[in-house]
Image (spheres, chains in turn brown, cyan):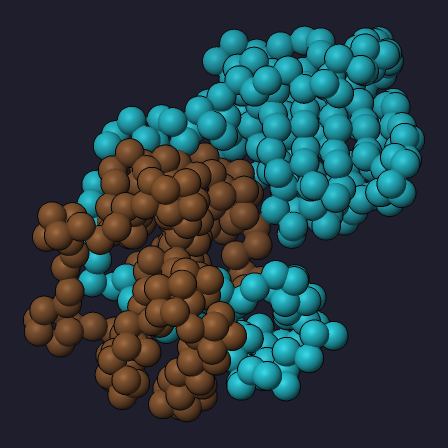
Length: 183
Length: 226
């Protein structure tokens, strides 16, 4: 059984309310999902809360997994990323923004080194290559939206341009990406 | 219509990417989700974008969460829930059909159409060696089960089964030590609820090991209303 098949089988059993399968799924996947929460939120207490939310959602939504056609790890990552971004946006609204502080960057930020890039999945390499073809600020915009949950309103405020202008930039970049990825 | 399509480039294809990124503003997001349900190409687009974007976290280092987190998750999911209001409202279910013979003698009341015109919640009672009150709320797919009379045999747990007409039983979950089970059913399971029969068996701790009932049927009900 490949790891992918195994995760998929575990999700299917969780959909049938199998608590042991849920525990196994947690053992297999929680370190990756916690790593994402930490890296997005840069705050351990928040990351712990969000991880709890993430697994409650996984338990409740396991039955919907097949319907959306993602690979199982992508499905789990999407849930974790979504929950972490939600929390980060709320923290920013409440002024408890955890801005990318230098120390936090050093602690939590790890850009892929050459070795990691060499091992990367083909999708990861393709996306990295296509992002590199965009203007650097546009590629950074895509990353910030995905990893920091930046909203159009925030980007418009930061850059002093109209919201729809920012949105037009991002949409154009996304269409460029789509074409580059073989859309 | 906002006329947005005229102002912004990319059309539905860009919408799909914005949706996967989580920046598609309301109420566009809601409208887009409605389209997703009926347009497989669009859903495929979202799936492909989601796969690509997920690679942005590939290089994030994994970190073991503190061990207490899993206990918190388990408690959140299976710990003793607050006493739900509906339970206080349903004293009539308790022992209502006490002494009824085990097979098929049950009471179902699919009543209480709510004022908003939502589908009525389904209430059922399972009887036999023990009595259980079941409530299922179709819009929220929320299932709540309460053991109202009787107890699991020593060292055994009670497992609730959904038996769709002509199909093998599907586990709906194991009752907690407090005799309760509350959960949101996955859509695939919820679909099977109308017309199905519910039954409870006693099983080894943790539930039936292979996903099929192994113990004695302790209570069952009549088919749920379709």
